[in-house]
Amino acid sequence: MGALEGKVAVVTGGASGIGLASSRRLVAEGASVVVVDANGEGAEKAASELGGVAVQADVGDVTHWPRVLDATRRLGGMDIAYLNAGVTTGEEDIVKLTDEQYRRILSVNVDGIVFGTRAVVPELVARGGGAIVATSSLAGIVAFSGDPIYTLTKHAVVGFVRAVAPRLSENHITINAICPGLVDTPLIDGEIRDSLAGVGFPLIPAEAVAEAVLGCVLGDATGQAVVVQLGREAVPYRFGRPPGPRAPGVEGRIPPEWLADSGQPAPPKGS
Ligand SMILES: NC(=O)c1ccc[n+]([C@@H]2O[C@H](COP(=O)([O-])OP(=O)(O)OC[C@H]3O[C@@H](n4cnc5c(N)ncnc54)[C@H](O)[C@@H]3O)[C@@H](O)[C@H]2O)c1
Image (tube, rainbow, N blue to C red; front, top):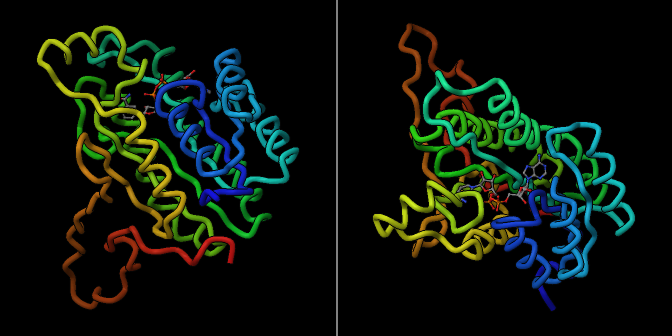
C-alpha cells in the first residue's frame, strides 16, 4: 500500500519536467492524478501513461479552473494540489522586456498560483483537509539577475505561500513552496542549457524535486520554502527576522507574524 492510496491529486504543468516526474511519484504512492497542462496533447500522453485524467487548461485563465475541479469531482474529490506550471521570460534586459512577455509570465507564474489556490481550497476543505504545493524556485529566495521578472514572480510565490499558510492551517490544509536550483527539464533548453553544459554545471534530476514534493504532501509543516539542490536533502529555507521598530511603548504591540519565522506545523491533515 502506498502512502497516498485513495487520494486524488491535481498537478499543473503535469505534461513535462518537474510536473510529470511529480505526477509519476504521486501515482507510485497510490494517488489518482489529474494532469493539467496548456499542452493538451502532452497532458493526454501523461494521463494515459499514469492511468489518470487529462485536462487542457491555462492556469492563468480564471475561467479554466472549473474544468479542473469538475475532473477531480468525477474522481470523488481533491486531496492534493501541486500548482507547478511556470514559464520564464528569457529576458535579462528590463528595457527589452515586451508587454506580452511581462503579462504572460505574471499570468502563468502568479495568477496560476493565486487562482489555483482560491479554486482548490474549498475542495480540500470538503475532504477535511489536504496539501497544496506551489513551485517557486531558488529564484524565489535569491536574486537571479538573468531573468529579473522570473525572480519577481517566484518571490511572489514564496511570499504568498508564507502569508496564506496560517489561515489555511485552520482547515487542516498545508501549503508549501518548492524552491529548486537548476533542474534538467525542457524549461532550460536552448541558451541556458548550452551555457551550463559549457561550464559543466550539474543539473538536478526532476525526480529529486518530485521526492521533495512528496515530502511536503506527506508532512505536517506549512508555510515553508523548501530548497532542493543537487545531492542534498531538501531543506526548508530559514528566513531571518527583520528588525522591529524601536520606539517607546511599542514592544508587544507588533503582530508576531510580522517578525516571526514561518514553517510552523499545521494541525494534522484530514483531522
Ligand atoms: N527547470 C528548472 O531549472 C526550474 C528550476 C526552478 C523552478 N522551476 C519551476 O518548475 C516549474 C516546472 O517547470 P519545468 O522545469 O518542469 O518546465 P517544463 O517546461 O518542462 O514544464 C512546464 C509545463 O508547464 C506547462 N505550462 C506552461 N504554461 C502553462 C499554463 N499557462 N497553463 C498550464 N500549463 C502550462 C507547459 O506546457 C509544460 O508542460 C515551473 O514553475 C518552473 O518555473 C524550474
